[in-house]
Image (cartoon, rainbow, N blue to C red; front, top):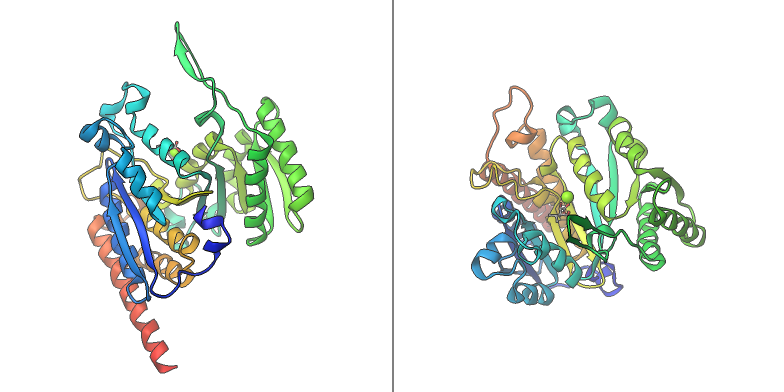
Length: 381
Ligand code: IPM
Ligand code: MG
């Protein structure tokens, strides 16, 4: 993975060209992607790097244009890029289509082709959003969980799969190697955070989970120095996430459990629209907001671009190693939220909601003013 190889640990060198493949996709995807790319441009404007963006279709949009949800030209652009940004895929018209025409098949194929096996979904509840949480302010205050979702295996890709004679089946399968590599990453993330790793499974029922739990323990015994590891069943984890989210530091889990728990974590922040993600592995890094294509609000200019902006911050952090720029983006949108400038999904009673563009403009203004003051400070030194 770009993000996990030794070479990519370095900061983007001065003068570097940062190549990003930009896949807006379906529904609100293009709207939040446009907002996110403006934020990316603003965040690197005063850095000595150049940004090169290549837009390509994916998902239902691509099916309508040519038949495949992941066209070859899109895949090639992604493989040639340093990082890929994807807005969202999914469309109501696609329901009932054969699997090779489903927008989701495009995304799953892309994750596979880019060898992304680790999905980082950070869930922080900024103080300004505790009031809109689906949990209570007291319970949610201070929440800072890194959901680490295994992304390359499990039910999403397991064979055999199919449907015949009134029956359908999927297979949840994990090898020891797959569990070990994600467990290692989880341990190393925990070490850089608060030193706690909770591995979530269903070991009371599933053989796969029993293997998962054993390998996590073995990996921890070998590589877990200084990390406190525990295990939790997924049903209980779903409840604990609502009742006591601050107990979690890194929450490690398999593909489907991670998909479900991360939507639930969206409710902790008040809206799924607020969460971003980084998909890392052995190829090109992929960044996507956690939310879907939200066809009901697509094209209305009301979508929350926060998850997309959070994904841009992750891209700056994990692929380009531009930590200061990543933080500038995060502080900018947190300040805008704190000012009470909110899209409708995270507004509080009495606040007048703003649309995607107004929210984005407010974030851009913040980034520009902090970039200016950084430049002035630099000049003074
Ligand atoms: C997500 C989404 C995807 C997934 C869908 C669109 C295939 O729900 O990124 O969480 O299930 O991984
Ligand atoms: Mg999901």
